[in-house]
Length: 221
Image (cartoon, rainbow, N blue to C red):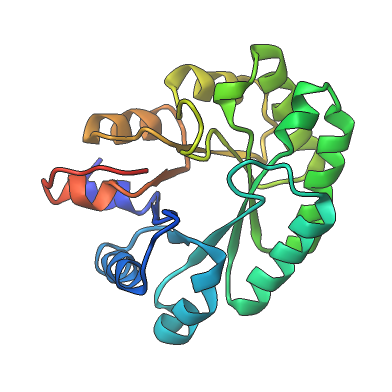
């Protein structure tokens, strides 16, 4: 797999709290040049990116990020505003407290509600694997599948750990045929990028991929 082929699977990410417009422009320019799958950005920048770049970049944003414990109505409002501003893909964080309390039906219903709000737009569900037991991860695979979401995503990149090959393998075993996998958090080398794609991930969330493919030292999400 060539570096260009790998980059077509990357959600080129800039989610730092202190991200400036200059940072976002650099991200989008790289996305255009290297044809990444999307740019994943804070909601506050969606409208300006859409007005500046139009259809040149595919815009992804985050909802309930990074802790997931916003109420469902607030998450729906975030989705609706993001789509109105020009976003095409939503990465939502599940209510991790509900998962830890075993309220899997409630979590599933929230995912279903947000998918309805997304309509034909892609919904990726961040389950934050670093906080979950194997049984909870399996339950989330079933909830994401039953709710009709498009992707299950490992991590926010803000938790105690990121994606692992073991979690991707577990997802592959328990998700339905219409659910794809996004690995995120800790993808720090070209070898990591290749490994997750070879394991079957359709998307990789990272700020490092372009720099890695250009042979640069990188840090970040």
